[in-house]
Structures are given as C-alpha cells and as structure tokens.
Image 1 (cartoon, rainbow, N blue to C red):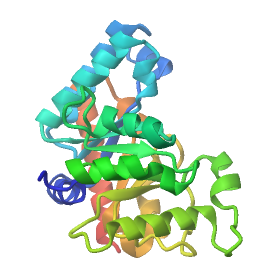
Image 2: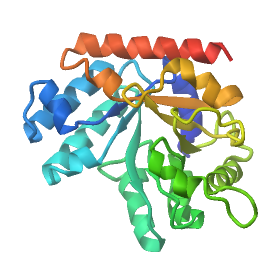
Image 3: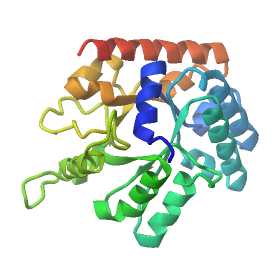
Length: 279
C-alpha cells in the first residue's frame, strides 16, 4: 500500500520546511510577468514556478480554475505541472474545492486521487457543505490510494462566516463540526493523519476551536491577504507544527526571475520556521 499522505507530508515539511506555494496564474499576474493571458503565457508561468521551486518547497497548491478557464489546453498545462512538481519531490495539493454527492463525488475523487488519473495529486481540497457524509467517496478513495483531503472548515474569506460560524442545534458551530469529523478520520494515524482542514491564517484568535484534529491545517492568507508568518502562533497556538502555510502572490509576484522566486520562497520558509520554533 502507498504510504499515507499524512506521513509523506510530515516528512516533507520536516525536511523542506512547511511552506506551501500556490500556483495561481491570474490574468493580472501574467501581465505583471510580461506574459499574454493565453495558453502560452500560462505554460511559461507554470513551468517557471515549478522549475524554480519544486526541488526546495514541501507543497505546491495549483488553483485548478485558472487552468480550466483555457479549456483542454489549459488542463494539459496543469497535468504537466503536477507531473513535473511531483517528480522533483514536491507534494501537490490540487485546489479544486470539489463537492457533490454519490457517484458524482466519486468521479471528482477519481479525477484527482486515483493513481491512473492524468491529474493525480497528493491531496485535494473539498467542500463539505452538502453535508460531511457526502465526502465519503473521496475519503474512501484517499484511504485506498494513500492520498489526502483538505476540507473547508474555517476559511479566510469574510463570507464564509455566515455558514461556518453558524451554530447547530447541539450548540456546536458548523466549522467545529467539520473539525470533529476530521478528528474521527485521523484517529490513530501517526505521525500525521491524511485528512486536513482549511483554516485561514487571517482569522485571529481561534482558541475557541479545537484545531488539534490529528491532521494538517492548510492555512491560506499569508502575503497578499494580510497575514504574516509572525501571525501564525497567535492563530494556531500549540498545533502550529501541523500547519501548512500557503503563500501565493507573495512569492509569485517576484517572477519571472527564477532566482527571485527562490529567494522569496526561502525568506518565507525561514520566517515560518522561526514562527514554529517560537511555540
């Protein structure tokens, strides 16, 4: 059986540092790089980022939508980016935020979590807001193939609060309920479970939530969204070692120069290491 995602992620973070770099080819970012907003620009952007960083960071998080908008040729660029990144030793979390029920959820899972899929990734972001149980096909496929999931729990966008902070009849918030489900999925898994949560680095004090759910916490929001590595201890406290901080534009804006991309990623990685060491 393939080594579980959680174990592979723990080793990658320990060896390379916990930094996750997003691959988000916004039209505006392509323009900043002097590239056209077309498939050629997309390919140049993605290849440059992957070649510059895949041998030194723990995780890439490509945003599927920015590739899908170019149709099949954009998806082909994404496939190549994922393959190249994984071949160089980086883990890939596909940021597709899929969520559905039954056979449709199973098909989404197969698209990203089955070893024979062209877009096979180490983990996938998923939305549980058709009910956590709707994710079961993806949970089952992840277990079978040694891959992982990151479930939207406490996201960094302000609109998320109206759903995630809503209080259920049992007095527990929706976000807390998702964390509790993940704790059950990860029970007994060492050194780290394969079922993680997305928890925004911009959310401030989260001490009212039990973030110790045995799996990784993918933390977007560092850089352009306003959070810094120094903010991480105040948000995540004792579970900071299990946090995978994501930086996208904060690194990507330094392209297309590969040396500048590497220098920026190294700076963020060192700042994150210092923040983790302070807890």
